[in-house]
Length: 168
Image 1 (tube, rainbow, N blue to C red):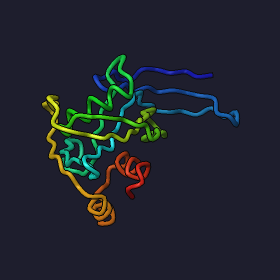
Image 2: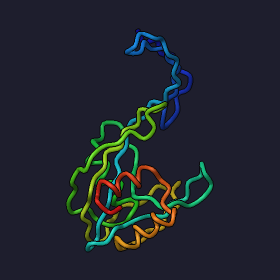
Image 3: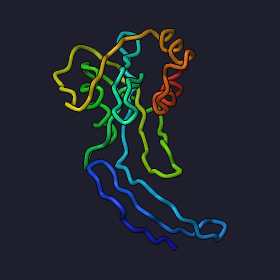
């Protein structure tokens, strides 16, 4: 039996307290974040990887990432991936191929990220979000691997996606 109580409703996510019966019969208490899901893109432009250095206010620093974004209400992961790739890189997406999915932190959050490989072409007319500080960089696979080996790529969703894409 599951009992769930809303603790906080926000713009991006909702927080709940719940009590659930576990498969072994025990009752367990959880603090759960309900998230709408997201899409992440491994964009390629002429064989090189389009990465971003994005400022993350929660940790107050720039980190290396791949473009990603939260699903808007009624939006498919495919549409979200196309939109976010254009907004965050400035390039048009000519093709998308789904590589897989990951749960970011299943101990307390149900966020599922859909990972896509994108082939990109010329400039898009999409505008980034005003609350994002993003520097776009086009890197060879060896450069991406060097950043990873040097401990400069710390974003878990990016690391998973680079692995799905066979880059690291």
